[in-house]
Image (tube, rainbow, N blue to C red; front, side, top):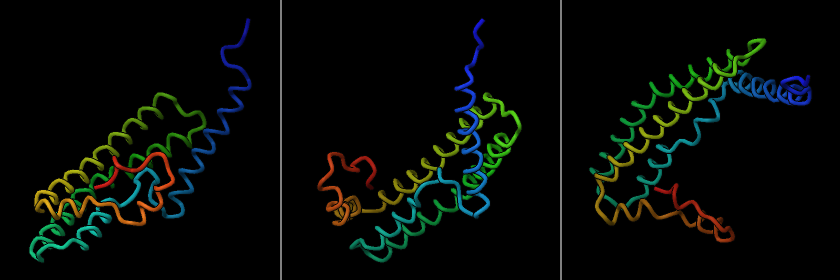
Length: 161
């Protein structure tokens, strides 16, 4: 009778799990935030607002919305950090449960989606403060991005503000 799992599958999955656990552990040991948090979209938005040709009152109102968005993200990021710590603990067990690890991965995905939704809510609030010309100026890609993308087949149209 043939074994349910082959030895080659076992020997390839163990190093993969070990590498994942090491990456998660080393990331927190170095004081780095989890890679899944991605870029600081609100910082990018703040930088773009600073370059807009708008009245100072509108600019300050935009900054206030961005600051409010950052405050609302703090709790979500703390939950995300806790979820990554829980994943790390699961992976450090001698025999991690696949169901538990995948359920935790789902929880992390939900928290990441909530963080992104909060960023988008902030963006929408900032856009509501701007007139059509300022919105167009905010959405325009910087020249260096256009130059970098000129030789590529696909651009970042779905990711710009």
